[in-house]
Amino acid sequence: MKKIGVLALQGAVDEHIQMIKSAGALPSKVKHPSDLNELDGLVLPGGESTTMRKIMKRYDLIEPVRAFAKEGKAIFGTCAGLVLLSKEIEGGEESLGLIDTTAVRNGFGRQKESFEAELNVEIFSDAPFEAVFIRAPYLIEPSPEVSVLATFEDKIVAAKEANILVTAFHPELTNDNRFMRFFIEKMV
Image (tube, rainbow, N blue to C red):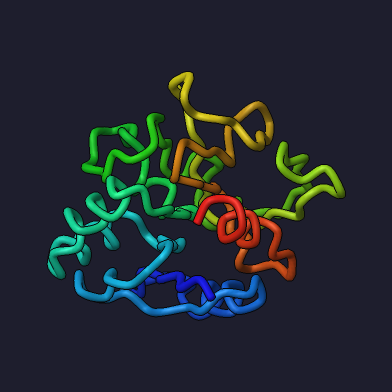
């Protein structure tokens, strides 16, 4: 059984744990660099990206997560995870630089502008995906290596590059585990 870690510093950790279980993998909470050992994949959950980055620095997780990806292990970032994984963050904040695109933080507005929307996702031909957007970012300026998986209002909200998968929304807050299944079955 594949073992998938969830960066357990902030955000929807428990929801991701449940989603990983529903997709048939073994979840594990990650709080320290040594927790990355023995993992097949890693999830960076939603939350607040600046706070998450600061906590990652405090726990010396920035370079180990980069190394994890450079080893070819898969990482799935949702919302704040997307922001952290992007090569650049509009406004110049530090990122992990693991997917060659730029993130626009809170691109759809603040908390009160949160919403749900049906998305047509390139990797799911069976039905639209009901996405939950909370202070959601979006992506701009993807390199040719980045596959755009979904857009909303002409903004990139799901993408993949090599072993990195990102969504601007929160699949873990739905009952639809297709993104997690795709991550575990096709990328890990």
